[in-house]
Image (tube, rainbow, N blue to C red):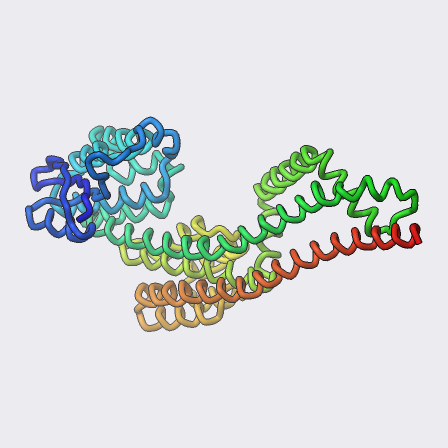
Length: 408
């Protein structure tokens, strides 16, 4: 059976580590719990005699900052320790000993020191805004106020897990199109840089003016072979300039506006943002944050500035006592199904539950929209690659035909 290495905590807060054989990780977790231990880490271990890479090599690829996955693991593990009855500073001490990377350990040490210095956990987290968002800090502050920090952190971890699943499903679906684009670009570059030059000397000896398509292809191949470094530098410069321009609020707003109008892509973007809004706001409301404060926090979590600024008018009308669902629908920016579900939830006094349903519905809608987008994108990319290759081949063929006529 596979061998697993584990780290667990007993009721007094002492860390126990060791190795056990089991069919899977779940069996290890159950066995540790039967022994009165709280499992914190369970990973597959190499068998004795197996070749292992030195730790120094692995450290080369270690992240230099705290990642989202590490934040998720920290949240879930801290929730487990607090719900088991351990004091906050002792729980943080245990997590420091379990930290996988130096940046994570350093951040946890800073949080522990702040807590021991008299600050609350939310105040300690707020000093690390590059890692913990306003949403995260607000949820923790609400948990502290309600005296249920462990429970609140568990809900927060579940919310982060669902957001991670949505993000990974979209990224996984885009892997094949990205590979296809890379193959297409590489194929065309090889044809232009290595295949076309094989005919260039022959065409030059013919002493006859070549057809225009052949001249264009030969010029493109020559430019790529001799000035590839300039093209590469120009591409990098354009990407850098584009990203810098997007940091300007007015440019970013116009770009997001166009993005929402694009066929297929705009639909995916809107549904992803609605799923994020519903899940984030539902989590905030479920943990005692007011609707008005929750909307202000949600606005900061949205990546599309058009949809985010649309919430400004909603917040203003909410302050005037005109509700949430109807002003949201009147913006005309959000899908009608989502706004109607939110309106029904608000009128029935079940807004939190309805927001959770909206998030679930639009998680599925995003998956369907991505599949629809890829179903169209993949054949377009394949046909585009075929057309480019055929154009290059035809241009060479026209040059060869011209040489044949010269010989005849």
